[in-house]
Image 1 (cartoon, rainbow, N blue to C red):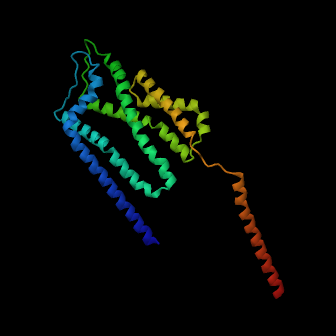
Image 2 (tube, rainbow, N blue to C red; image 1 turned 180 degrees about the horizontal axis):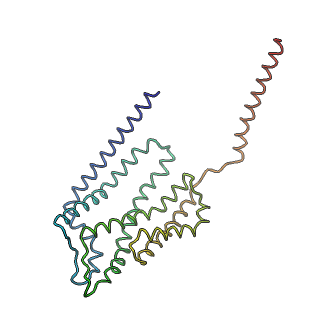
Image 3 (cartoon, helix red, strand yellow; image 1 turned 45 degrees about the vertical axis):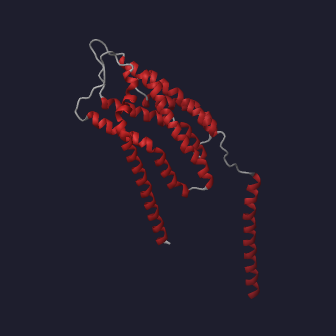
Length: 275
């Protein structure tokens, strides 16, 4: 038995290694495909900032390898995005054999919904939040202060906040999963709307750029996504105890007890006869 368990454990490790290796190869291929277009990708990402920079301002770099290393980082990120379907498939292929059929049917659509929501969060940040936030920050530039953002600092900023908005848009998936596994109840969440709004406000203040407009632009969709998660979670059928089933479950227990009493009585009678 121990030998079988050991073989099973080693088999899982080998399978995990194979899945991780395929994912790493896919990311590397995505990196090779992305690198020739790294400058174009960076120009696209820098467009919201360049559009609001004052006249005479532009992006700069202060060390010789800064632009090269920035393009390398950007190519790795782009390669991961391109390889994301392969990575998620490998993740799903590793987990799926250990799930029941109804669990696979329940969670498989959530994986793809999570991808779309994550991309939607990043697009929302790019098209809505970044232009307003950058316009606010560059408004402090004047005759005595000139805005000259660094190339690597800007990349770090947009990657950080794009990931933050992508994760914030996972709220409906999180609610559905927690309700599905029974950790949370829809009725409890509905009664806790005011606390949910407070949590969304605190999260938006932490995740968004440090200005009120960006905070509000993240707070509104976060709370709307909370309500969307409640809407879908309310349509999840959770098993309810049935009175008839409870009676059926109690009947075997009573009959088993009766059989034990009868067996004990028969042994007593047998002992009395022998005596």
